[in-house]
Amino acid sequence: MWHQRLLTLPSRAKWRAYRYLISRVNVPPEPAAVPGHLSHLEGQFLYRLASRVPPGGTIVEIGAYLGRSTSYIASAVARRQNVNFYTVDTWQNQGMSEGERDTYGEFCANVQPWKDYIQTFRGFSWEVVKQWNRPIDLLWIDADHSYVAARRDVLDWVPFLKVKGWLCLDDYATAAGIAQVVRDVLLPICSSRRLVGKMWAARLARPLDRGGHPALRR
Image (tube, rainbow, N blue to C red; front, side, top):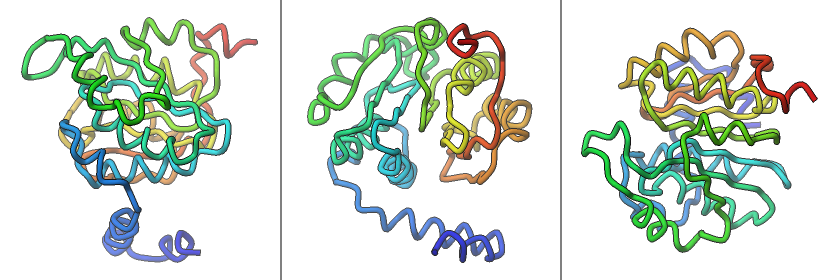
């Protein structure tokens, strides 16, 4: 198997080989036309992960902005048609360099081709999670990059991530808050760690048990 051979390569050669494999993923062209900050390589990686979620599985996106990453994930879900995809955002642009504004209309227009495969929750992630009670197979976090907010998202949502499920955080390479959360919270409980563009990705090796979710105590 390719992934077994990949493990035997030196780290730089391993990344070149993995990048090549990501670039070979057959992603439809439409998501790349959606505006946003996600690179095409990162989008290809999300598409690949979404394509591997098992039937009946669940994908959660925290932070959607104008829908670029949403489109990559939803295009994979559309081909499967048996995976649940939820995206969470206020669509008020808090924390963005361009300033606050309502972006929900733009988001809806951009994801129109995949609207039947996307379920939206409009609100702050820490409010939405209070009503959440189902396990997650793929968790993609691209919201507030401050340490306090990113740590809260991780502590709130990762307890629902299945062991061996994938967790991806955007802008690890450029946002100090994200990098610190990875070091403080995620490194001890994750495996198969990799950097794809600016994105940090890993598989959950053991549960993050915060003990604060009623749904987890059932």
